Length: 234
Image (cartoon, rainbow, N blue to C red; front, side, top):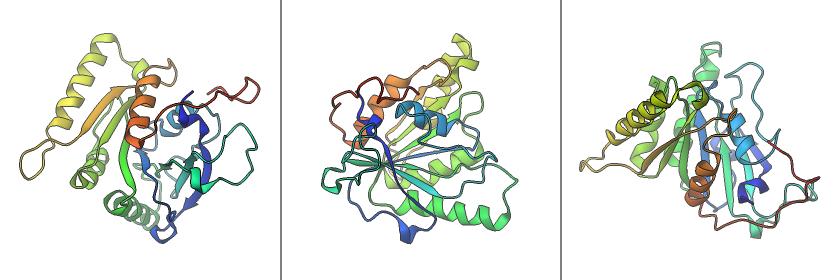
């Protein structure tokens, strides 16, 4: 099974000073508040309630961390994590893009997002979730521009691909890759940016996303699968 299935809640932070004092790679999920980020995390981790979507989109202003390694999610769920066996942290970043949030709260979480993606040494890659029908909004592009100077990979997951027909899917994927290829560094070299289609409803792109995330996190393979009554279907 995927090592992502081991994911367990690790900690939540609202200020950079409270970030985990770990040295393992971190993979961060970012995206607009309606891009399906929480649903995708839950499906990729094969758990129904790991990542929670706020009832009022855009209100969640914390970074939630989930651990990979050091514990098996389906067995002894509440036992402490063996930090010596911790392999990776998954960071669920606050969703962005809703105007209902107050100005002070929005400014706080924009600073939190920007500082985290630009300065966190442990951050190995960014998973950017975008609605396949409306990719690369102004805020999505701002996130890319924050992160690009680090030179680290971005993997874009175009969600809700089931809403597109075959030709639309082909065109969206081609246009998205062309957009990513347009980002270059000071020497004119491209960045390690990739993109794929994804649908939680039709379960499109799950294996591709899993393989890419495990590659970016440096995870080396699966573990013994849990028994059926221990595993939660996403």
